Image 1 (cartoon, one colour):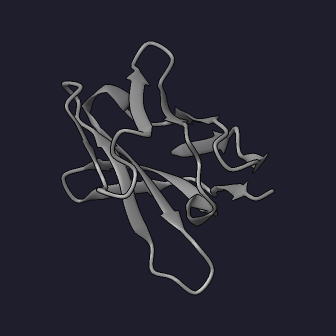
Image 2 (cartoon, one colour; image 1 turned 60 degrees about the horizontal axis):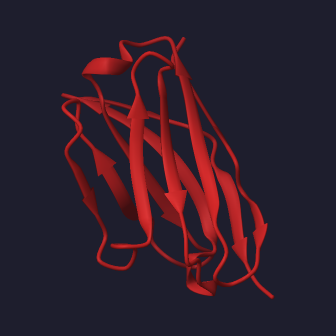
Amino acid sequence: QEQLVESGGGLVQPGGSLRLSCATSGFTFSIYAMNWYRQAPGKQRELVASISTGGSTNYADSVKGRFTISRDNTKRTVYLQMSSLKPEDTAVYHCNAHFSTLDYWGQGTQVTVSS
C-alpha cells in the first residue's frame, strides 16, 4: 500500500523557517518525481515545488529564492525547506509522487504563518 506521510508543519512567525518532510513507502520512490502542493482556504491547490528523479528542481514564482526542495532516495523522503515565510504561505501542504499515470498523495500538514 502506497503511503506518503508529511510532517514538520506548525505555527511560525513571519520571517521564520520550517522544514517539511514527506516519508514514503509502498512504491519505488527513486523513479517518481516528487512535488509539494499547497492549498489555502478558499483557494485552488497550487504547485509549490518539484524535483525530478535526477534532482532537477522547479518552483512557483511566489516561493523562488525562499523554498528549497530536496530528496533522499535512500530514506525515501522528500523535503521542503521554507524560509522567509510570509502570511500568504499559510496553507495545508501536501506531498505528491508522480510517475506516468500514477499519482499518490499524502494527507497534508498545516503551515500557519502569523504573528
